[in-house]
Length: 521
Image 1 (spheres, helix red, strand yellow):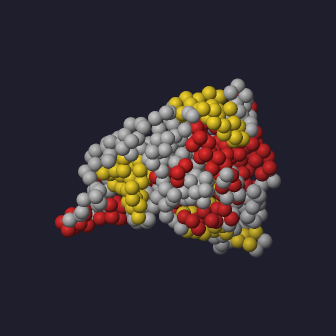
Image 2 (spheres, one colour):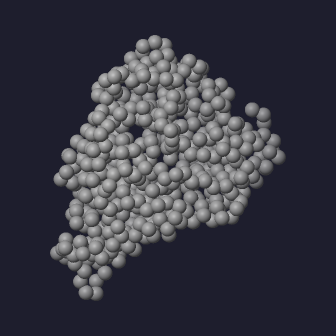
Image 3 (cartoon, one colour):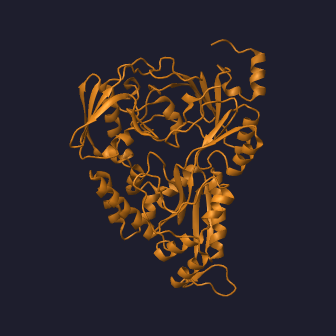
């Protein structure tokens, strides 16, 4: 690397890109994120998925047109649905020179299966019986039962991505890897935690080489600082879903300024509240149903999301596979909410603003991730809506890890939730309902019919009959709607705002991936 002159250092300092100025070029994209990439081992869950997707690849990929070949150029499925035989590309190498072979595929999948408990949310991990090397570039993944989402789940961002076996520790990956060595279009060249990461184009990539030379992932936790960086052109791209990067007001202001390009994906996921059926007050179905009627979703869609998102009447959009189902809808009706609360014994005494039952106030707590601007605004609006029907709602914003810990423990009455979107919805998403670490499990565990829910999910995932599968999905979502453990809010969209110099900005099927490889100046 050439030495950096004093003049160069000064220029880097004043341009605001000092942390990544070494190696910076005119063909380098600076992307701003509120989050560091962290540990991007694709067999674990600590890292940012967009960064994992840059470096590590899968046998197949999920696209808007369905599953397509990737590291596997073709595959066949046995008549009984239990054998998936993949023919691998023969021109793929890891960035350490190691070729991708059937042996390497087996080593990687075996490493994932070795950490079974950590991956139990994903039904495919439970269904893989064994992996058999047939030839150098031919491998058989054998299932215990036919499992219809197999190809979709093999194409997810994690955990079925491939790491060079030279990076394994003792033949395993669950306790870490020695380096982030993948087959993808990008190589992680430099990482300073909580400051930046620099990815360079893989010069020996088997596919179409990125048109950018490098991507700098700049960590800017403060959104105002992020906006200033965009305005100064020290970053050229902000990209994200669910308000984790920009609130809608800021997005709209930048959009109308005419100085930036903006883009929004089709609806990809569902915003909702989960109601904890195991808590004393929200354990009452009548209360849960009353809360459904009390929230003005149109005000969220219009007032907070600027009509960029549509009201969600159902947990998953009817556009999602198997979800075009006629379900009961709880429409905004504060009077109906009050009537249900009265019937459930929660009375509003003269001169009081909070309902009581046997001397106990109708007081609830809503937990949300305070790093997410949209969640805070939605929580405040819901707080006002519930106040109008005599419900006292405390809103608790916490750092993301504390929010996730509360999700796992079930220590909440209501919690903000976002479905995982395509390609996870509905199969992978509902599979996670059975895992205690997820808010969905905690919300459902107090239901008398929780065993029925879990049994239905098992039947859905394993039935080979398409009609029976559709019928079971209808039963599941009808049951969940009747139990009122979810309050659907809006259908979310991924948003991008970027310099007009930047071209090729688009969206992958997954809201968690960013296709940097298609971007260029």
